[in-house]
Amino acid sequence: MRHPSIRLKKFKMWLLVLNESAGKGKALHLANQFSQLLSNSKQEFTLIHETSYEKTIEKLKASLSTNSYKKVIAIGGDGLVNLCLQYLAQSGLVLGVIPAGTGNDFARAVGVNKMSVAEIFNLYTKSDPAEIDLGLVKSESSQKWFVQVLSTGFDAEVNSRANKIKWPRGKSKYTLATVKTLARFKPIKYEIEIDTHKFDQSAMLFTIANGETYGGGMRICPGASNSDGYFEILLVRPVSRLVLLTIFPKVFKGNHIPHKKIDTYRAKVVKISAPTSSYADGEYVANLPITVTNVGKALSTWLAP
Image 1 (cartoon, one colour):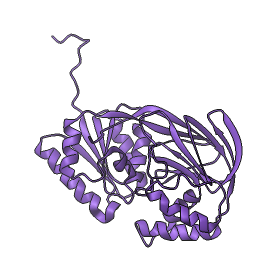
Image 2 (image 1 turned 180 degrees about the horizontal axis):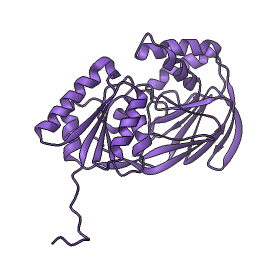
Image 3 (image 1 turned 90 degrees about the vertical axis):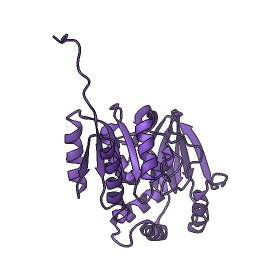
Image 4 (image 1 turned 135 degrees about the horizontal axis):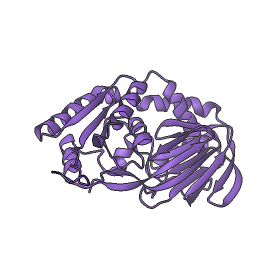
């Protein structure tokens, strides 16, 4: 007779979450490869394969409520990773990614962006996960997590415009959105509190980074780390459209930091208020005011060596 205090360990399956449209169908091909590797090694898994954001959320919540999964794999881009974050942060479950999106900045941050599916499979099945920091955004009406970069100002407006463009797709739509935004954008006056330092400042761009890159490898905050408990913060003071155009190409290599109109800070908590919106990991977060907090070791994931 089994002692009542002893419980049999429940087998934890893999949960694969697919964004079929990511990478012009590339995600489905990668999902099939990863599924085959799991099947070959006799590991159980479930695939969430829905055509809408709402149905994906519904299936994800329902699946997680069964407590049958330990490992969740997002097969898509940063938007899908961000969606999964909202339900996996501080849960103890492990989130991995098979990159198939436009930007793939989270995959870049954890070192799997250039790995094959077989290499990712070996990493996810043969190594222990690590814990990384996340950003937690609280607004007047919501609470959301992000893993890479939160921004408000010029690039948030670019994100907003790009998300409304049906054609062209991929990086081309961001180029088009940048040109359209540049023609009309004006500096925004912010009320800012960085830890205990309060000040007002008009700015073209205000960025809070938990990781170095956004927008597909743009090193907006070089040196930002998801394991040090701090955000790196960047503020671009008012400049002409021409100067802004000269600054942006330098962001790809992180060479923009020395510019005289750029200020940088480091903090655990940031409060910002202005008549504008914020975006993180390429997705809309909330209208300002918001409070952004660095939450240490909030997500379990795998890091490539």
